[in-house]
Length: 119
Image (cartoon, rainbow, N blue to C red; front, side, top):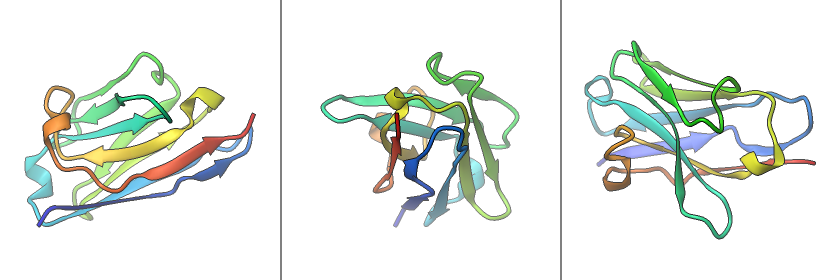
């Protein structure tokens, strides 16, 4: 079974730069583009960033471009999201998915990790 386990969230103070992790198992990690999405309270899923199978192409939502960095370690089957210059509106549950920007909604997601940015 596909398993995606996110971690690294929490209450973030101004100036902090957390890095989220997503440990993947149960599928061939290197065969899949990977994506981060988020969901704020009362809102739908918002695509955040995607990375191709070998990490050679990354894309970002305009709302996080220049502040977040997606990466992956295919030897460990782990996806990362480094977050800087966080804003209160970045507060959300962050999920990883084994898909790309166009199909993540139909793919497996983890249970998510909560990021709350202190204002």
